[in-house]
Image (cartoon, rainbow, N blue to C red; front, top):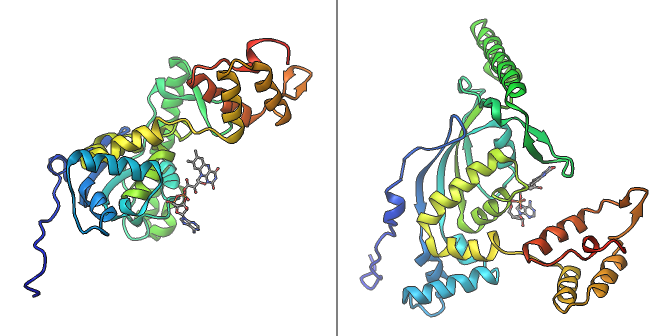
Amino acid sequence: MNEKAERLQRIQVTALDEILGETLPVLDDGFVRVIDYMGNDGAVVQAARVSYGAGTKQVSDDRSLIRYLLRNRHTTPFEMCELKLHVRVPMDAWRQWIRHRTASVNETSTRYSIAIDAAQRTPPASWRFQAASNRQGSEGRLDAAAGAELTQQERELQQHARTVYQERLERGVAREQARKDLPLCTYTEAYWKMDLHNLLHFLALRMDSHAQQEIRAYATLIGEQIVARWVPLTWEAFDDYRLGAVGLSRLETAIAAALGGGDRQKALTIARDAGWLKHGKNGLLRNRERDETEAKLTRLNLAIPWRSEPDV
Ligand SMILES: Cc1cc2nc3c(=O)[nH]c(=O)nc-3n(C[C@H](O)[C@H](O)[C@H](O)COP(=O)(O)OP(=O)(O)OC[C@H]3O[C@@H](n4cnc5c(N)ncnc54)[C@H](O)[C@@H]3O)c2cc1C
């Protein structure tokens, strides 16, 4: 052993150790458990400061540095931290989750093992309507009576699918084939490990209001109950500069600046030149980018110029 080697303590985060291995429930039968982690806020700072060899300094300095790194997308120091989770997720949400390629994953094999006997169920008041404006989204709820019928149908369908699966197994059908008619609501389990930089990217996409509600429930739990405990300074910066931030394009910045300067006509000209204010028989034609800009202007408490007066 090198006598001159610097003696290091293994990094431990007490707040995260307190929930290590604990099953944090999500949906009706899902969960997330922290299996292990590497690093903490200090490790991010230490990596960023490696050129000084100074390690961590004052907490206030650490906070400023982490905020600077996150604000300016200096990403690699965040890759020095890793989180390993054990998750139990319905297949439909898992199908979205597994698209995040920067994770290391081991999933239960239904070729090797019998599929988990649990399916996500929908309570009568939780059936959502198809969103009118967003083809991928949902909005509002069906009334409880209609919901109760759908929930009953769901129960029967899930029971039938399970019975057929069980029967195939009993008749000796291979597990890899017997599973083919199991529904997407069937739970799967996986060990899932990711570095903090990519985890924040996952959370930014999957905590967002555009993400499906089910995966959003998992992402929100991972963010608010796990990452916030593990790396509180990073989480605070992420909340400030990603989750709570409004990103403006060049055109949006010009429109907001015109509105801030009281020049509504200029804002309208910019939008018109961008092709956002084309009319059809029933008024303004749909324009997705304009819709997104409207949401941002509303967050900034700015009047939407093409909505505020009927002269466009
Ligand atoms: C609201 C929403 C709707 C979506 N709808 C659809 C849909 O309709 N259809 C569909 O197919 N998908 C859809 N997706 C999935 C989406 O397109 C991404 O595949 C998914 O979010 C993973 O993102 P990612 O690639 O950035 O993440 P990761 O795979 O974790 O990658 C992180 C980053 O690493 C880099 N990276 C990783 N692998 C590569 C690579 N091979 N080459 C280059 N760079 C790489 C990229 O910079 C990437 O952003 C949707 C996602 C969201 C959030």
